[in-house]
Amino acid sequence: MHVQTVEYKRVDGCSICADVYGSSIPSSPAVVYIHGGGLIWGSRKRVVPEQISAFVGQGYTVISIDHRLAPQTKLPSIVEDVCDALSWVLDDCPRLFGIDPYRVAVFGRSAGAYLALLSGTLVRKPKAVVSYFGFGDLLTEWGNKPSGYHLSMPEVSKKRAYECIGSNVISGSGEERLPFYIYCRQQGIWMREVVGLNRDDRVLKEYSPMHNVRSDYPPTLLMHGEEDKDVDCTESVKMANALTHAGVKNELITLPGLGHSFDRQMGDARVRESLESMLAFLRDNL
Image (cartoon, helix red, strand yellow):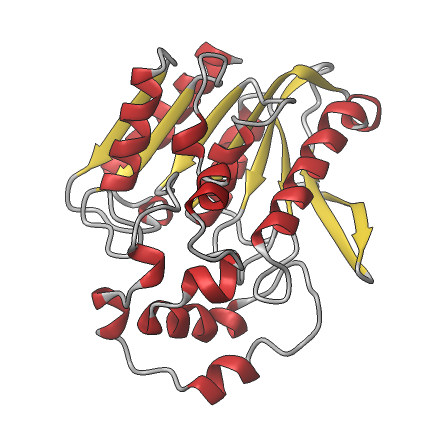
């Protein structure tokens, strides 16, 4: 499949790029794809190939973006990168790739889903939001206490955790930074080390999509495995409730027996059906 890499931003000596999977249809709708990785690791290359193929096959242009990664870059600057990416998509991509700026959805997985949900609170919003096993509330304790699930994994030492992340500001990585994420979850310091915000509830609330839903929030699809041990399924349930309370069109699909990153299990009929549900949602709302 043809893919074109474009730099959309340069900051702190760091080049931030997007991969564009083009559609041959003029004025095509677009899907901005945001990778997961706890805001610490992952890249625009870490996509689910079947999803990309399905989007392009349905006539969408897919724009998979990078952003700077924590802990060198903290949440406000990460969010700034996503805002700049969305502005680039809306302002420049119609000319560069022929997309329709009035038919843009943001799709994210895990921490990328959190950023996708946050995009719905921006002044320049996407037309629709899709969240796969994401979260919308930073005021809960999960980011500030040890995770039993991650404590069941082999212990990551502080030395190894900090060695694997280096000191440079980067955007996009492979799994070499994963031990730092596990370390943060084992120690209960994800909020402190990664988000970079203290327990000032006013500030955390500002960066919590669930607490900033207004009636003009875009239609939203939330998908979550009920056996998710990394991001609990209740996070999507709470977000759906907030959307419903604000009168925002939304759909919540929970998948019994499936866990985090369930969408990579394309051999499972339920996962294939969930992909079809997402495509139907996008057809209805773009």
